[in-house]
Image 1 (cartoon, helix red, strand yellow):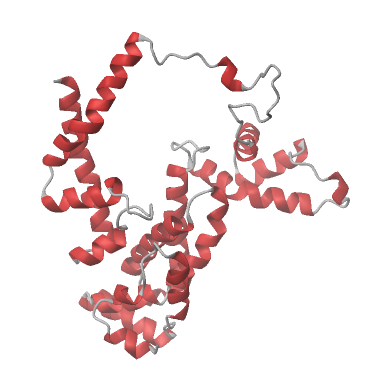
Image 2 (image 1 turned 30 degrees about the vertical axis):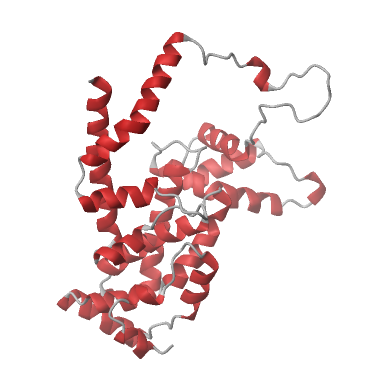
Length: 307
């Protein structure tokens, strides 16, 4: 595919398959042509001066492979790469919108910050071991501790002495380098290195078991819990239907596709970009509609619960 064929496409996203098939998506974006410096400068000026959305599409398309490359750096956090790519694409579109060709840098250098920032935000909001309310310094610690720890261990002269934990000197070095407290380094290392503990015993022995499940009380028949469970079931059934009824058709469909739909292949509903292409708006606009719809539904569910 030549660069000129990309320019001629009215809907650039039509060239890219859904993220539902990750291999096909990655293969497709890797085949998309890169813009030359002159083509990129021309497209950026056309977007800035004329609001040319086709020019924006060309710039986004030519950098989708960059998002895929960056997303690979974060697959170790246990989140689907497709979701990481989707968030990175949002960061890329934000970068394209704000890119100034007069700054004398290529878009690839400028976009990397926006792509990583969007992926970082997504990981912090979704990774189970990280508090959402973190400071800028703690975020820097979270995303750099693994690599710094690996570098420190690799620098040891005797590989046989490698340990999983940091020494006091190494903790002090990390804290000083990243401008955080020693206690924060120790706490974050504990979160990152902590594993899951099985509730059930892991052997078939008939002997006495001391697995954590043995120490958990069964409160399922406690009267207050029964009432609470009944209320939750009611909210999950009639409550959800009532909450959906307060939405306009577009908002309702977006919520249903994003949160309530399960296909036969268990792939879920449509992505932000698929919905954006269908309605002819940006993925960010779909996200805004989704957030507003969720607020309306929350209010409706509150009214149902207190009725």
